[in-house]
Length: 275
Image (cartoon, rainbow, N blue to C red; front, side):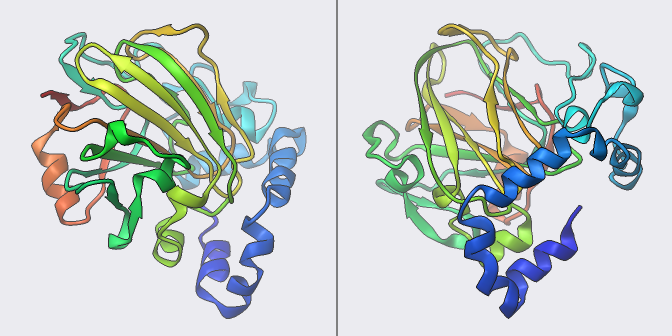
């Protein structure tokens, strides 16, 4: 969805020249957000479902009930659409998307997309010594995906931080041209204390078209698979950062990620276990 525009913006000279104006501020994403929040956008729902092969059987409401494209985009699912295990030693996937895991973090360096090295400090915009030597899981959402995200385990919320930034796309073409997206885009993160997995950072990264990252949970005690929040229209990403030796990722995820292959995942699926 939107591939032609992404190709122009990141793979042509004119598009790259305009990229700072387009993605360095929120004006274009906000304008798109206004349109997709309006009834004018409702006509795009049916074509998106057909073009992106989205399963209507999972919807909590019929597609005719959505007053705008963004209402459809931020849809809720039926209660049984995402089953999950109650075993507290298992770490569950927080979002639908494409998953990469990173295990070889030496010191405070973080090797991100395309092998570009960044510092954990750059990801959080401040020193985070508790995550030195830890592990990272990156779930990249696409427009076809369910765009609400959930807590992967029982936890206590310790802190919530918002970091201002750009609005670059997380489309693979954009990531190839701009591999530091996760350290420069607008983002929000929540620090969670857990019984089985130590301290975990749950980060939402905004992207082109995502003018809003919304938290829907309340209080400081949260439970596994409780809804945490949702993204407005656009591609977006959830990043999980673990302390050293806190989690063992599933073997298939480790093997695929070592080859640079993303694995398609759904909310509630097991992606690791307590170490």
